[in-house]
Image (cartoon, rainbow, N blue to C red; front, side, top):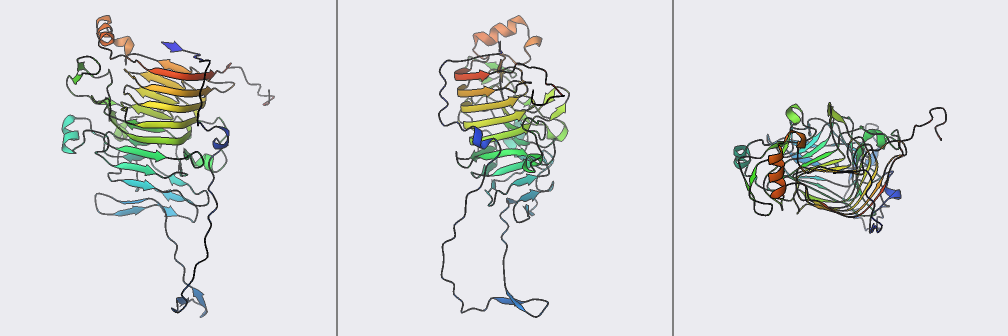
Length: 397
């Protein structure tokens, strides 16, 4: 079922945030209360000119962790921004295997990554997962991001992956959202509808996907064999997997999160979305979220049961909401606004993964056991694109 337009007469946007957050987020003023200073201790130092000056200490506020080899890694602080090189994190070749906290920075500072950020190792076998004691979200490391943080990537190829067992806890507020974007956007050089400036976010869970084999009907299934499906955006050592038999798995929490300028094409017909929810379970919380300018889909769901509440998708080139492989979550309160000149479907809804390669007997069996996609969408408004032709001679026309 493909729906180009799906408009519900009643839309309850609730606490969705729109205009003020599209360009970014600003930090607040910092008020320092007067304090009493004990001057009985001489804390001056001599400089090369034989004069004296007060000693100062600059605290590095960047994210830090200790890797498996016992080396402590921390971002480089320039007084405003924190920059993380490829030694800090560089995708599947160098995933972070311990909890990581990314703090909010003063003065509109941003966390700038020069490599992909992968949380937890990827496993493609039951033996690998079992050996690492990973069976559910929370068993692996957690990426925690403070309200008001901005995270940017320098390369189009870079993206974030939350592997099975790991979690992301990005909890912003209406006044201090969390923004994921590109360095070009921070520099003020990205145009409003520019895309593919970085990859996006891939979240892998242990949820049900009908690309795996199950016995029983939805609600009482058991896996028939192993379940390790290759995620979108996978290539070489950056390959990740999702899938399992947990409806209620948790991959963390996303609140007041904006994702901008995404959609790098990893390979032909393999583009990253703003956020890919791959087998993500219903105990994952996603609410008050926004996608702004994405080359492929806004949010794409491959199986799983995660629910989304209060969702805005603006200037998505492909499908603003894409559901496949037996996704059965609920989307409540959504607003889609396509570009005047570009935009595909408001919703693409596919019941069975790799549908065209399946036999009718297989399809009938999946539907009978309720393992096809069965999502619920409450209160959705789509403002669609006319896909007109822009007049190059008159940019305002």
